[in-house]
Structures are given as structure tokens and as C-alpha cells.
Length: 50
Image (cartoon, rainbow, N blue to C red; front, side):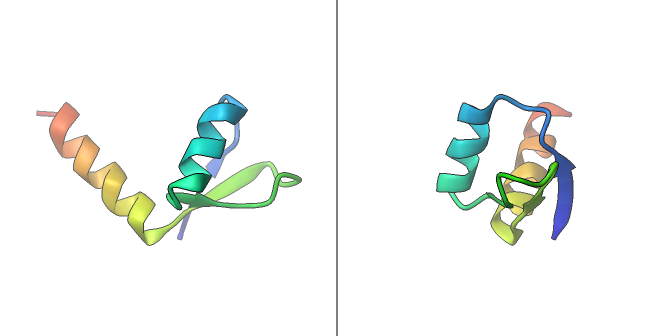
């Protein structure tokens, strides 16, 4: 899994966690992208970086 800092709005992080795209403790300063989260990020990169 890949890691990201939690400098994002908590409501967005909660949505990503509910969709199982990220995992992590509320106490930590970072979250981990799940395999599905990595695939979704790669898909969006292809869409937006054309």
C-alpha cells in the first residue's frame, strides 16, 4: 500500500474510507491507499492528465 498525509478535509477522508479506497487510524498523521484506491487514482490520472 502507498501512504498519504492527512491534510485533507475529514469529510472527504471519511468518504474515501467508506468506499474502502483508504485505510488508517484517526490517530495517525497519514493514511494508506488500498489496492482499489491505487487503481482508482491511476484511472483518474489517465483521465485528467491527457
